[in-house]
Image 1 (tube, rainbow, N blue to C red):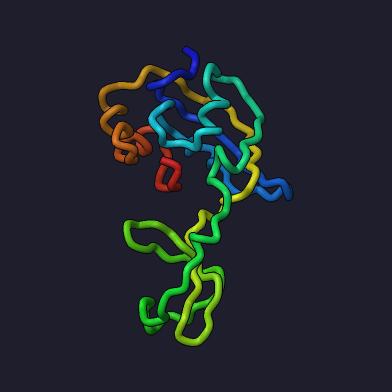
Image 2 (image 1 turned 135 degrees about the horizontal axis):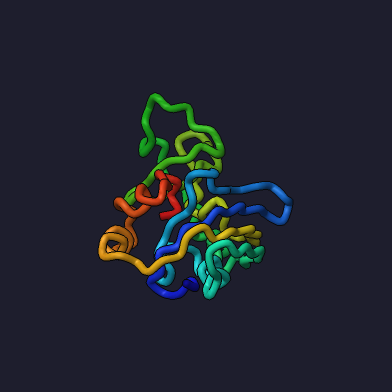
Length: 167
């Protein structure tokens, strides 16, 4: 079976940046699992997998626009230090979860003000993927329930993928 919309897909992957740095990769027994076409995966990633079959490997590049987007200065804001826990020594690079679960990092601390960056850490980056397709099958009702709402649910656990944020 070829990867197409509403296929259950499991892949092994390595993501590198232009610098050659490995930014992310799946673990040997924990493939990335998703439903093709459900909007769970970066658009540029999905597009490059369409039509592939089990056992096929592919290398491709995803530009920032089809990945995590371009960096936006509007996503860098100043907030009062009082919005953070008193017992935490804030340092640039620290990650926090904000309202709605959106992650942000501390960019700068200046007295009673903290500059935070809500851009995705890989925003603005060209992404290089090396992917091997491990499984492709028609999605079951359970898959559609687990993945259909864009959430993870039991679908990730069924293929061994536990909490890496890709689902």
